[in-house]
Amino acid sequence: MDTRELYQQVILDHNLSPKNFKRIEEPTRTAVGHNPLCGDEVTVSLIVENGVIEDVGFQGGGCAISQASASMMTASVKGKTVSEARALFEKFHAMVAEDGESEAMGRLAAFSGVREFPARVKCASLSWHTLKAALDERAEMVVTEE
Amino acid sequence: MSWRDDFPVFDRPENDRLVFLDSAASSQKPRSVIDAVSKYYEESNANVHRGVYGLAVKATEAYEGARAKVAGFVGAYDKNAVIFTRGTTESANLVAFSWGRQNVASGDVVVVTALEHHSNLVPWQILCEEKGATIRMVEINEDGSLDLQDFAKALSLNPRLVAVSHISNAIGTVNPIKRLVAMARDVGATTFVDGAQAAPHVQIDVSALQADFYAFSGHKMLAPMGIGVLVARPEILDAMPPFHGGGEMIKVVGDTSSTFAPIPSKFEAGTPNVGGAVGLAAAIDYLEGCGMEAVLKHEKELGRLAIQGLQGLGGVKIFGPESERAGVVSFWVDGVHPHDLATILDESGVAVRAGHHCAQPLMRRLGVSATARASFYVYNDEKDVDALIGGVRKAKEIFAITV
Image 1: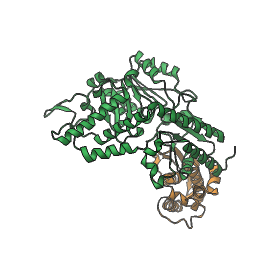
Image 2: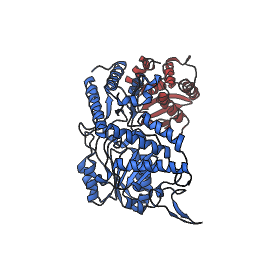
Image 3: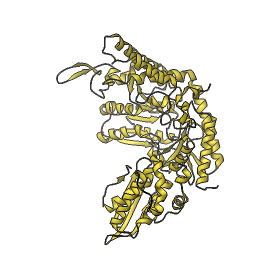
Image 4: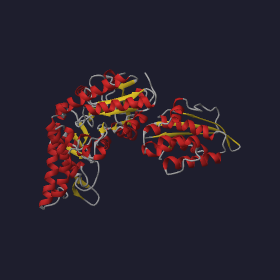
């Protein structure tokens, strides 16, 4: 697979101007994710009210894949219920780390190519794992495995 | 014939485009090393030091011959003061565990530098935590060279140990190691030199250097993985307690206590990596055939060309000092994260390392979370430099960065 297919315009755009790159004042849930491979760290904070993600923000630096993935993750789960977000995490994880479908993933399908680059799967999944930890209200730092 | 032709990995059809620029992580192996290891297992394999039969004698001779070869190559104080380990990391841990437990006490200071690989930092951190001793990290100058004033300041604390790298794995800084060791000795400190990036590239003479401990790995200098060396002053090794207990390292084993073998066996518990040692000896033969001066000159020239080419692209920051650097080029391309860069370079067959290079304290001081690193060795040539520059140019195009 050509790296130009990996670095699709939508990924480059989100890398340059990430959505929801912000600190959330008084989040109801927050988690920190760490990729020991590259030292990247991402913080995901949420305001969850009545089971709905009312607001979400992320902070941290990293490669284009991780920045764009965090940006698109936040855009995808904002306004969704917690259980919808969890389901989306499972689908996203299956798409980048296993052989899950990319159809019906909308713009997130841009990350389906990551599967062809095993060393980069963690970059795409870091913010999603961190989201899941925040939803699970896990206090310890998340370390990506896949 | 070029040195490259001696390395079968480049003959593989799937590797016909391989531009291997990650030798600072681990080097490729020449045919002579691979053959020496195969030949050992085909002709001489048995456990060492204990068999009376011919094959075991042959294996022992191969193993001890490798030790003598290493001793000569790095100017060891004594052949028996060459300890085979798994690598630099184990060598450092051996010293931290054995020498450190006996000699470092509460309130003592261990001096390290901000250039260190984690393997020359974490063992001392663990030791200091256990003993209530303190780590003093020497700062670097803006150009990535060691701050010698701060080094002198750290020495004024009268450290028990000074642990310093000869050459930085992350940015290629060549430390004035002779001077550093002399300064440390003047204040009565014991010295541990991490030579993992030096032994493959420069002529080492430990006894001229007067270092108390000098450690390096085989796999970075054309030898197999899993074999490394700790060279030390024999009298210090004699006074140290063992590291690992087990077979090979004992004299007499009683029911409740034992006496230990003299060096080097005292520090080589269990069956050693004889095949690895044989491979290391073959690697030394290969490097001596090249000539260490020619090796260093070759790498430095490629490093110089790479820096020139990268700077010509614009928007590239090179880390590390201008002079006094080995063939390691650590850099940052504006707007392209090192991991993205490494993925794009890989598509052109260019293998570089992207990350913190096991030197997180250094990355913090450089103000980056990661760098891309190209490191050169005997098998690289100018075409490899061109491929690197071309790949970086392509990455800048993909990320649409115009300077």
